[in-house]
Length: 256
Image 1 (cartoon, rainbow, N blue to C red):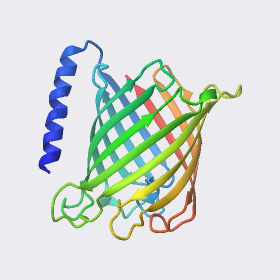
Image 2: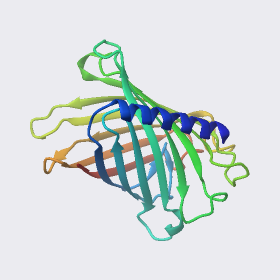
Image 3: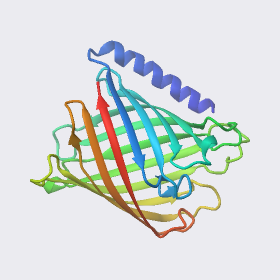
Image 4: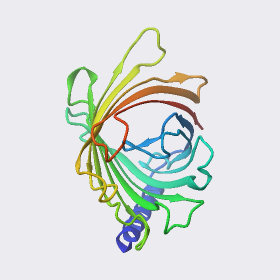
C-alpha cells in the first residue's frame, strides 16, 4: 500500500510539472460501450451477461498524461450491487520515433471498486497495465502488440486477497482498406498467458486466444460509432468454463 501511495504521489508531481511545461488544450472524450458478453482478460465478469460501460477520458493538454474514469454495470437484473467504478491515471508516449523499431507505449494504474459492496468483501483492486506496440517493425502494416496486467488487492485482509498475479497478452493487428467501408476494417488477434491472477484456483498456463473484426463510422465531426464482433477460444477451463465465446461490442464516442 505504501508503495502504491508513493508511486501515485510521484505520478502526480510529474503530472503537475508536465502540465505547467506544455501548452495545449484539454481533450475530453466521452465513450459509451455495450458488450453482449463481458469478458475481462478471458474470464466472465457477470456470468454470461453483458455489460454497459460509461467512460470519460481526459487528455491533459497533449502532455501524454491523462485520466480515465469508467462506470460499469451488468445488462441483466440481479447485479445491482456489482456496479463498478474504475479510476485510472495514465501516461503514453513514443520511443525511437521514425525508426523501424518505433515503440508506442502507455502505463497506467487503476483503482477498481464495486460501489454497492463493502471494500473488504468486494473484489477491490489496484491494476497496473503496461502496453507496447511497434507499428513499423513488420512490413505491410501488421502491428505487434504486448499488454501486461498486474492486479492485487487494494487492502490487506480483503476477502479476495489471494488474487494477485499477472496476465500477459500478445497480439497482432492489421487495418484492411475496403472500398465499401468508410474506414479500414480492423483485424485483431491475441493469445494470453495467465500467471497467478485469480488465485489458487487459476492455472499458470496459456488461457485463451481471441480474434476480432471492427471498424468506425464517423456520424458527425466529433461523433463516432464503432461496432465489432469477436470470437474467443478458451484453452484453460480455470479461466472460463466455455470453450468458445462469440460476442459483440458496440461503441459510441464523442470528442470535445
